[in-house]
Image (cartoon, rainbow, N blue to C red):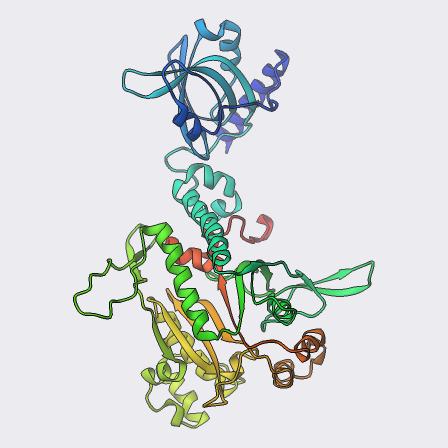
Length: 500
């Protein structure tokens, strides 16, 4: 810490020295010939170009200096010599540190080793760094510091930066994919009078002017369905949701979802769409997802798409295979794979079996919740290749349409990949009477949680429809091999330092 304080003190002294010379250490607008990557593309021997970036390396040769400039697109070497810029600029440059931003104009040339380089004619300081950056090769070793000071993590950790660049690409490609299939992107309220669309604890707030208690949304579903009532046949929203619940490797209180609704479709069509979408995103990341398996023997097929997940030491812990088609299985059949007699047991016997299977349950759990606990621990957490779990109990999904053959089930899928839910999809319930009954059962005595405006909309008629959601954070974890949701959220929620 003393060494760091000493370095900070030295940098502040240089700052004062620059100011004493009349220089502006925090610069001004600086016109360039493009990003560093664009400048490298324009590079032509003898051409004059302008570039700006952060200094990440400096080789002092006495009267001359070789400096590496970086921005988010790459690196470029610049050459500064007293004959070209003058003694005054060289003296000023001696007050520049690693991490500072400069802008230069110069002539292109190749060094003896063939390195594209700018011979600097003019130089300006554009931003002074008062604290040293983490050591280049080791970066931030403290995981907590990586999350808390993400800007330094991005500067020093190319792998981390690549994850976020891929996330940005995923979101862009999702928009292109959905729009190409006729879906319209919409926006729905983040402040809601009734927190609906999922069973979760909301964040509460208050609007002074209207005297309203409001909630940050836990899901956009009920508003998107209003748009189906209003005549929009295909809609989607990339949205921020908020749930006042626990934090874990898979959960952050603020997260990003894609939700989409398609009039006259069902959960099977939504599953097909989601499978196609995820493989499309994977193809942009990892050189292509395998097509559907051939129907005729001997038809050649592309290799499977394999995604490796590694531990902190870089060892492969598991491999996820996204080769199509993805498996589909009914919820009850998957439970029967654990215990063929499960649904023949009494409630008491099922609780006994949980103890034998090593599944912890709460004595207050309803019978369907006990079964769901077995599913989560022994099916979901142990499933890594894609699996669409279909026909779930209606108690688990109050907004889905009941199955015609068995009214205790609903027509839904739950996509499991890499041991966690990636996407739920439904044949949407559009019967307002049944929907009211389901919501009342979910709310119990708290009838104020019923969204009467949504039910009113349903009474005006909503077409049969399919819908799905995809957690963008979890999807990014899957496709990049990240092991924690904090690794794919730029600024995850953390406790203040004084509360650690």
